[in-house]
Length: 168
Image (cartoon, rainbow, N blue to C red; front, side):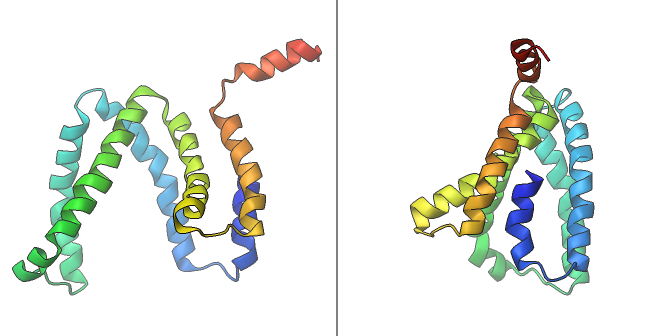
């Protein structure tokens, strides 16, 4: 899967930016957060967890917005309320509840491995819906990504079966 990611990223890579480092740092904390979310989900429902997260993060986001000079007005809120509701409830909220339920039922490592299929679906649906033709680099990267996902999510007994079958 790393090979597939490198095939996609390296042709356009020019330099390592500060933002890249921030992305790597944020990605390092995601498994830790997922682990604690999985533990919390054993005690409370997904809906309660989302409510608590929203209550805690709302004032923090307002403070950050104020720090960067953004102002929130009632007229601005009225103009964008449908976008906020669709994005917040349907797209983010529903997908987050599905994620919390998934890591409640399967191991976090397997759930994260399954999310590796997202770029493949994006490529496929971009072709079907948007008629966007994949580049040769994207098609080349598809193969190692696809087999990496299969290896990460498959039952680990396949290696034992191979050893028994070929007696090595």
